[in-house]
Image (cartoon, rainbow, N blue to C red; front, top):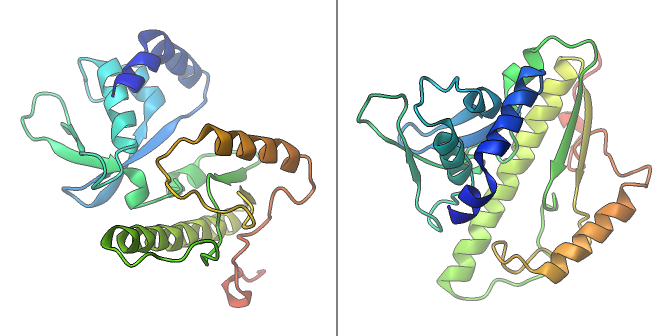
Length: 228
């Protein structure tokens, strides 16, 4: 909360609002636990003061960002009122609970002369863990189980994005951290040494012709969209 309030200032909000008026869009997703549904926030509209009559756009902008990073169980939910003037509050957490990658239908429906979808996965798409055995304790078993569930959910969301792209005439591109890179032992530990290694790897990899894949790397033969 302190970090977000430090970096997301009124000046930043003004910049987001200005870019929104120029036609650029910034969307952030949270999960409404009470309704068990994904909520997509138009942050540019919110920054421009169009958030259902919110009296404090900056505070609302900060709360949405905080909610989008609130990993369930590890962090408490952020309570947000659905609109100004009501006492009801809804518990919002990380949007990854419903959609690790934000690919909503409305994105594909917007008019465009040329449409390209680029997906950057800030992790690996490997479906198997070959780096670390599960320790016989509740914490490690729970951690690996959740990781497995999130990985499978990511695979499904990416596949739906691939199908939506093909059906809407959108060019599809995706990339992720190579499977050869061991996963972090603690996803919440911001290890500078590891982050610098990943940054250098990204710099070197982006120059390669195979940096962007034209379909999900885990796609099976009969998953492919048939040519019509």
